[in-house]
Length: 434
Ligand SMILES: Cc1ncc(COP(=O)(O)O)c(C=O)c1O
Image 1 (cartoon, rainbow, N blue to C red):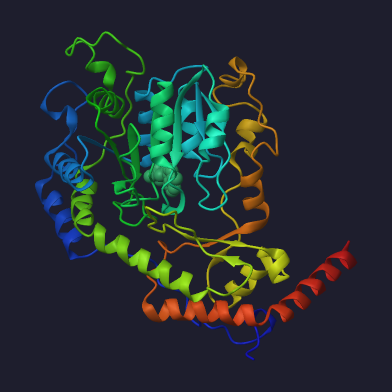
Image 2 (cartoon, rainbow, N blue to C red):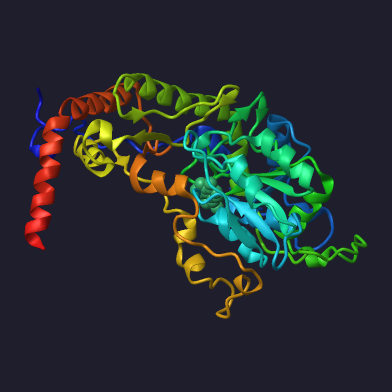
């Protein structure tokens, strides 16, 4: 049996995996066209034809509307900006509660705080790592204004169920679909099931514009608010005779013509780019079938998972070594396995110290919500013990690369006894060094 690279053997992958690069000549031509026009942005922060941006931005939004079958698309310069705008559009203000998952990129849970709202953490489901509707229901109060659900790692949360809960309570469901373009539940695209959906076009995603994002909605009132927040909304209140000034202060969340030009071309390739990630993930999943103690990503019936990352659960009791040691061995073989995702976000200092805006504790000072460790046991279990992943949107992953990744999994799995011995030695050394 080949010796583990961790113990001095030869690694399975001798060269680092190539970085993912979905850009082609089409994107280059699009950028050149905008550059030659000299008009790199078409926005003006006042009511008029240019309030909604330049011709390329408008074209990108129209193309997106068609592809995702939504009424309104509002491009932004990041999904973070999009989430802030969505929370504003939902009318969130000081003391309003917004239910969020603790397992996501931090921007999801910062968005309510920006408007003085209080993030309330509901737990996740262990099979898909997405918000658990039962935990959401337990956390709804008379102060709940919105729910932000994340289609984590590219798998849709229980979106129809959450939409029904939101509609039943008169609250707004915002989908953070940064990681799930073309994911779907019961034939409907993720990002379009909530009242507002937000997509990311940052460099790490299935398709991208460097930085960027898109908000989508079928509701014209939300669309106008999103546009106002994107582009100095305070200036359109008078010309449009808007009486309700709630969250009408705008920012500059505008997308450039350059990014929109790239986005138009990327959007044409989205089916192919997403399907390739899906194929890679399916091959990886098949390749580890039968490795007891490793649970590949689950796909709920009726759902399409688009695999922003390929996330596994590890049962230490069955494989006999910790997730950290297992990933260490894979990394030594050249597989960039990561032993955990983010910390449960309520562990961040902003929640533990309850200081967000200014230094006087606002908005936490208007709420009795506490952020105790242990409050979401499923997420803590995933973070501390079980979840590991491979960022398959970060690497090109040709068929031979996928075969090599699986060969590394097979090799490490076949050498679990050696790995257990390695782990025991490490522990002994740590004890001796104390
Ligand atoms: C779930 C989620 N939400 C929001 C964001 C923020 O996206 P952006 O970088 O476009 O602001 C990300 C980015 O990784 C994300 O993964």
